[in-house]
Amino acid sequence: MSPLPTGFGERLTALCGIDSPTDDLGGLERSATLLADWARLDGLAVELRPTTAGPIVVIRHQGSAPGRILLIGHHDTVYPIGTAAARPVRAEGDRLLGPGVADMKGGLLVGLAALAELAADRTSTCGLVELWIVPDEEARTQQPACLDDWRGADAAICLECGRADGSIVTTRSACTWLQIEATGRDAHAGTERAAGRSALMALTNEAIRIERDIHAARPGLQATVTQLNAGTSMNTVPGHATASIDLRAATTPDLQWAISQVATSATYDGVALRSTNDQGFPPLTRADALADHALSILHDLGAVASEAAAAGASDGSWASGIGIPTIDGLGPIGGGDHAPGEWIAADSVANRVETVRRLCQQG
Image (cartoon, rainbow, N blue to C red; front, side, top):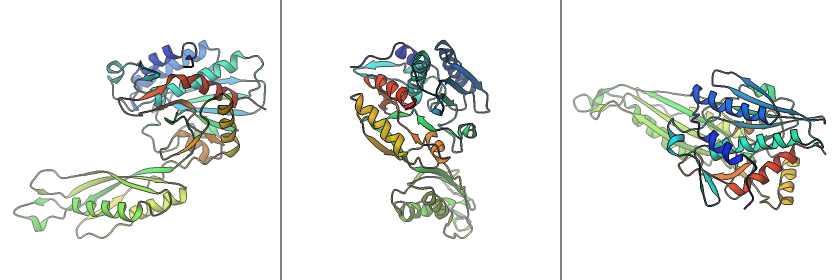
């Protein structure tokens, strides 16, 4: 098993030992401060940029060559406060387990280690390399607050974890999450049933329609009803109901078509329906030259050199959406995201650091 880079295990334990769920400003401040302190120790320039969602951390190294490369990640996680203490990072065979090791604090440390090596190497041929760490990726469906700052970069490397089989991610689906609200009329289910107008039954029919008529209507299109909520008591016709819809598509036009189809509902007597139209994340389009270069580096290192398409979104999707050649999955090989068994492969870390370092070099 390849050894971990010096200090990587200690930093991973400390960073994952901080609860930093989205919207917990205190936890996000602590994780941002720790990352900034390490970057300064590594001789890197640091900017802490406050936002209403929490601090963005920007870590920079200016090399001697022209060009600009972005490393992209996030320091928020999905786990509630108390998870870090309950499940501290631990080794289990060749795996490191803990909250956020794969999604994506391990990837942040890969980027930081690669930047530190570039800064320490007097023969490096990199240009400007920037590590952007945002605080709100897990819950946000809109573009990151720093998207305009990314414009004009030559390439973007997103540090989400590699797939469990070692593959990097070269394409991602466009995706969004919609809400449908139905408003009818409450009524006593026994004595005044006929006076009620069931929002629940209307949304049940809509849920069936969406999964029957929209899901798989185009190649790669997924439409999944993920939540259905209604009712105030066991003996009341429910006059209000809500549903959540997960949409994923191969292209932005296909996603826009699916959004329009969700809104094209049937008519229900006494029940009004309203749906949101959040356009969500754009797709990550394969950047051929960058993807092929990354796969060549991995092959040369004796690592798994394969690629995968992912249905999930990342902030790499936004970089790709504004025309920056982008690849993803350059964090450690891992899996179990958002679950108690979240893990990374310890022996993948050194190869990922070296791959990112080489990708940042010119020529």
